[in-house]
Length: 405
Image (cartoon, rainbow, N blue to C red; front, side, top):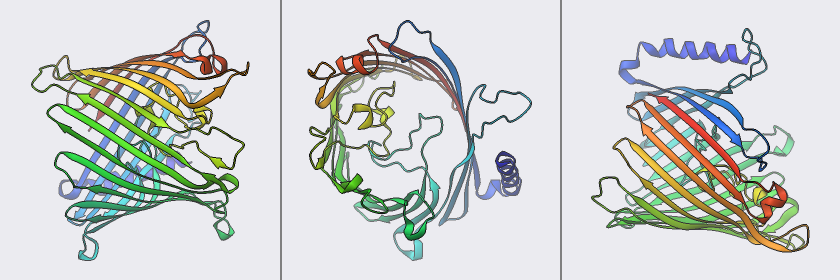
């Protein structure tokens, strides 16, 4: 029933907006298909599992006046064959409202924009809050954002609702409040500062803040990226939190070279809990991050600290990219994953070795509307993954086609 209702709304929206499309409506759309071959179970004796993922998005950007903007985006996410009958809808219910928001610009003639509704929220390099575009669904928040526009800064104040329990005294509700500031301090340098507060009612379950900064810049072919965050407050059962995250990347892209080489090396560090029995929790939580972008494309560390066993994560990496042709990009990345704190194995010995990963990616822009991306990855387990996952190397391949307008 939900699908028919949404389908009716789509048609109604399309017909009602069509007559005015030339004036103030712009339609957007995307169909993305990804074929994957997955042998990620660390057992070379098993065969590959192959499957097809499809994500379809259609949206309308509406500008009835210079100071008003609205965006509606519907999405269908599915796996080929999940509807087991070709004559019925089956049990799949993949249609959803991915985004629906309005924005009032320069509200009350002040340098303030107000954005309210359901929306993708992306801040900084997405190590803490991101849209997770790789995922077949992607992340959306419900909430509101006030944007203060100053001569040397743009400051977002946001209030996002993660959980609405609809209970007395708001018990069970979970909210995300914060400030994210873009600062124009140095030419060719991006500087940001942020404060994020997560609150679950009652606060004994979660009252945690994350504060820090991000900086990125380039000079004569060299580029750098630095991010630091501290987590404090309390988590479950009012346990004190004291955790840190930092990232440092340095790279060089020689100017005036036809194939545009770019070599980058760096480290991402997420602190771990060295003593689960004390009264302080020291494992950094990446919250709403796009971890696929950073910690290996095979996605073994999507949920940190859980996927790092609470011991934290250190990712030392080297990345190389070149453009063999004007519309093509070839990228190679090597990750060396370790826990930030010692992990105790079954034989009572300790180690930090999680494993190493190699990611090879090829991207080709076919034309203005079509892009192909192919990739392959291998994960070589260290002592921790050998004990918890398996002894053999893990492999994964994919081919993705995106058609958009």
